[in-house]
Image (cartoon, one colour):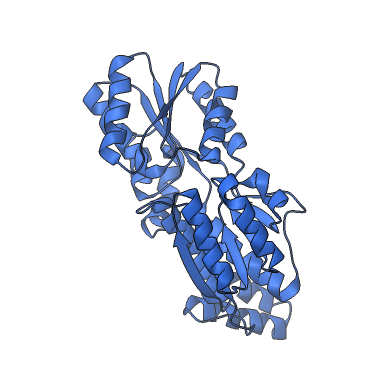
Length: 324
């Protein structure tokens, strides 16, 4: 919040009245009070997160902090099964929420219920997954990274590191974003890449599956996991298998930052989940208050950013407080 306060103070030099108001808003937000006097609207966020997923904890934290600032009553629910997620969206519609934030990892299951929300006059913002479907489904905008572009960035980075044979570990069946990541990496990677499907709800199974693959194929020199919690499982599998493969991952958290610092991990792909949650709430507030829309019909990109050991020190403190 220090940066927000600094901006407010700088603005005071240009306009004493406007600057004072900006300073008051920044101070209110820093103290956990609403920084605006707009009505207390209710926004619901419904994601495809499974239990205990640190990535979505960070998304939720960003959304909650924006909700405090914007005087929003924020509701969060999640389910990694597409039909169950759709039912949670229907529950939000039945509550007549003032805004809706959804992820579209399984767009076929979500299409009809998102259409219901739009028909009911509820503004919708999509986050994280479903950039290709967001506009078609009637959402105002999509906030996240383009998963194909992110995958291509991984392929390029593997080339830079001289890798020849990689394993892409998919931990959630039916997640279109995960398929796009691995396909994008395979497209730009000069070596060969294989997909490995694992049960992401069973971490011992994830570890065992990666270990078995590394033991059976010693030529694999890179592993790419698609979520921060699975990077640690891959590190354990590598050690047990006696493999020399470099472990890399999508997403960032405190463990991944430490892994980068200690060089147990090669690189991570950060899509800034805190920003996804924060911006989604903020954009819905701006739409309700001022009919503002960002993106011009295109997704608002929060990534990808390749994070290496050189970057980890600067981000470590933010990962420990759960905002990166």
